Image 1: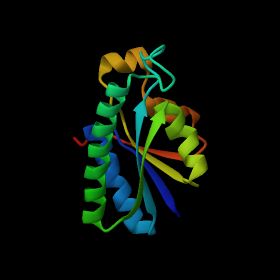
Image 2: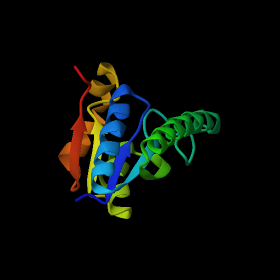
Image 3: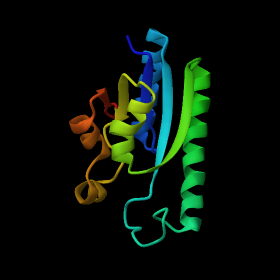
Image 4: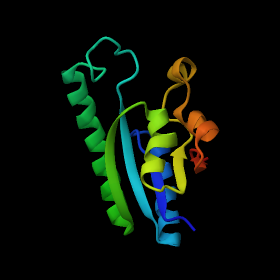
Length: 146
């Protein structure tokens, strides 16, 4: 039923739960999961250069993203699931809802309820809410247990 499942990862508990659910689905449908984290260079960095953020800040964000992806790969390996991984840079909402699914024939996005704290959610909006409202791909939202 699902061949390519996108799992956006931000290091939060909810994104870990989404990964766990995506692995269950991937086993059930013999799917490939796409482990993706996005370095957001669009918030609060305007005027910092063409890439949107100072190089040192980008390097730090890249290191964090690599740690998130490596942990997800390790988990996917432990589950015996096929995967591809990517670290992208740009607007996470747009990349998750449109760009990555279109470029990789994604037929399901499994995303955590929210990875940001309440203040950021009010100020910049939930990526999950944006993806649910705007993606043309099916979306499964995973909430924390209990």
